[in-house]
Length: 104
Length: 286
Image 1 (tube, rainbow over the protein chains, first blue to last red):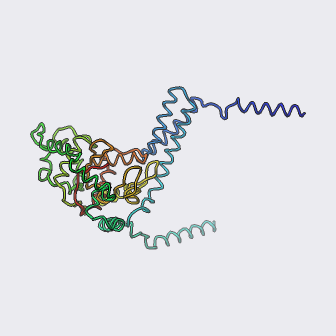
Image 2 (tube, rainbow over the protein chains, first blue to last red):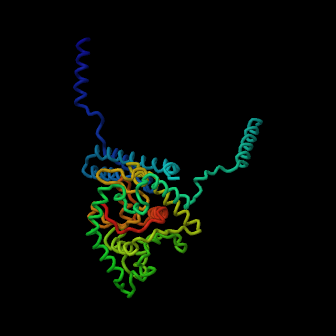
Image 3 (cartoon, rainbow over the protein chains, first blue to last red):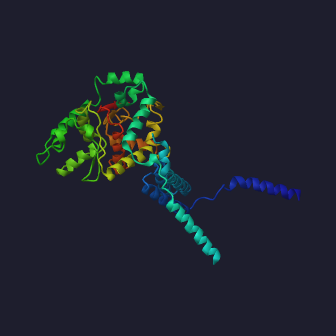
């Protein structure tokens, strides 16, 4: 019993080095992430307040995908989506709050 | 059923009460450009009591004694001089139809910078000097200039130079569209944007005189009086359009197109609240 517990612990320990923390992204993962990022990008542009970093991340995602690096491409697309969403949040938050800064 | 009827009655009572109540209007939300101008200028005068009113047009130089001395020396051989020569030449250069750029402006474009931007009631929009230049070129079958530098900077530099000392006299006509444009410009000025979450006011109202990296920030009051400018950072001349788009990029916001409505309205607002200050352009900035 003791032996088998030790063997299991060793197996798990070794396994933690061998198995990556998350599965590698596929082209399908990238495509889904890119579509979501592109949609958020379109919305931020429509509001006339897009962030340069969101645009750069979207371009980086496309470039990584073209090079076959879908891990990087998916991560960049997700980053771009989050940045675009933050830009959209900022635009909506500022619709009235800009007045707080006004000299009166 | 009785319960539903009771709820409907209660809802109706609330609606009647709301309709009968006097409208809640914040006095400060009612557009009042003259009051804005007064408050805007007072803010800067109070913040910088030692700066002479007319010196606000000198941007960072009015905020920093060391920079002021450097600028005075620089003015002996001003870096914008070549732009003046180019502008003068372009104003007089005949178009294919024989007319000139000067023909499109009152007094041949000499000493009129202080009247721009203005609200054109026929076109229903704000006309900046840069837009007026390109409208003139296009109306005469010529190619419009780039809005950000080169020929446009030259022509506007020459027009500013011939208007030095004349005070900004931007008017808001009795037209709701003009007031809406002014308000839109004000909204743009105070709205935070870009990943850095900065508005124009973050730098030019909250922090003039402070350093941002190696640069001293200019006050918003009089900031357009010196346009166009030679910037060492650009190694060349730049127009108001260039300044606005580069400001947006610096806060990590995607800039709009030069002379888009928001930028023209912003120029309208900023120029109006600087009424009474002299044109000092073209300027030179670090």
